[in-house]
Image (cartoon, rainbow, N blue to C red):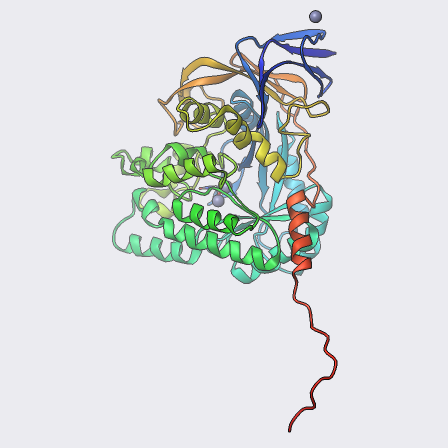
Amino acid sequence: MTIAIKGGTVVTADLTYRADILVDGGTIVAVGPDLHGNEVIDASGAFVMPGGIDPHTHLEMPFMGTFSSDDFDTGSAAALAGGTTMTVDFVLPAPNQGLIEALQEWHQKAGKARTDFSFHMAITWWGERVFEEMPKVVAEGINTFKHFMAYKGALMVNDDEMFASFSRCAELGAMPLVHAENGDVVAFLQQKLLAEGNNGPEAHGYSRPPEVEGEATNRAIMIADQAGVPLYVVHVSCEQSHEAIRRARAKGMRVFGEPLIQHLVLDESEYFNADWDYAARRVMSPPFRNQLHQDSLWAGLQSGSLQVVATDHCAFTTAQKRTGLGDFTKIPNGTGGLEDRMPVLWTKGVNTGRLTMNEFVAATSTNIAKILNIYPRKGAILPGADADLVVWDPTATKTIKAAAQKSAIDYNVFEGIEVKGLPAVTLSRGKVAYRDGEVRAETGDGRFVERPANAPVTKALSTWKELTAPRKVERSGIPASGV
Ligand code: URP
Ligand code: ZN
Ligand code: ZN
Ligand code: ZN
């Protein structure tokens, strides 16, 4: 059974050209003029791009006394409706729980996925057992380990634990990720604000200033450099964090930065809305920032100092958010975005001239495929690649409305934004998974994507670190001690 996608303009991270694409089974088998298949998808007037990869989701995540409300079923349906064909979620071992045991739990949950998926393993505590199990995790096809520098008393790890884990990553050819905020300072500011009577959602923003994020980013970069590993900083929200990444990259350090679509588009004024629910629904960490920070993030995508746009999709209902009435520190942190990431980035990025179409593909798919070491199986339009494709209609418009979304929650932080540029058809491993408003992929169609260790950048850095490691100078004629 072959499918020919005909008459479209192929857009990849580095090229834009007219070509048909022939898909056989789950794979792209040819790209070129005048291809024929058993089935035809008419792409005339459309752009055909690699399906989106969202490297940062929390589906059915146990967090702050509850579970995020989109699971792998509704979350992956939302992804496909927005042109995303692969998600990477975070396995979060409970305190003292083994990594492999936690991984099995996440595989159970992900059995419902309609899109392909992978996992990052979070290091939520440190000990002999974690150290011993990290290579087993790598053998299971996971080459990234996440560290929370915030959420004190819950997910947070300290510097010594981070250094030990980063060093272990270096030995294993894996890459650490960080949620970079100074958790001690955040915890202090939260208590101070509460004591002063500042208990509403706006205090969430005050408790997590940009400096707190910049300091942690810089610290993580230094620790990664000393451990000899690359570093990936998730949800970079501000100039202070971006500056640290930019500076490190300018020195030749292998540091990657991931802004979220939310931070690019929504600003801190959201927290000052008079409606408590409205403001609380937008509570996430790091919080939304002002326009200067947003401009910095866009500039990072343009200049290449930031590489990936993700969602951190972690959706809580209004009822869940209300746990924090009277105490903002109890508002479950997280927002949605899976269905909206690509249309909103296209609208606010490509349609405004802030990004080229090729930069859009790089930021939504190809760059992360390379960083996660799954390129060109994912993130590419090449013979042999998985046929994860999106036929993108640049003329299609809609106004984002929670009432029409695939996500299970009762609101949308992008409500009312008009987008121009939407997926007409999304193909997942060669199957039409979404078409004209309807998700066609079934629950359970998704497959786990193994990601081998020793990505090119990780390997290059370890070679360099070995070459430049301290070496004892062997001397002859050692002077006699004393006089
Ligand atoms: O507020 C957020 N970002 N919630 C999800 C967990 C995390 O920190 O990424
Ligand atoms: Zn022909
Ligand atoms: Zn985080
Ligand atoms: Zn997250």
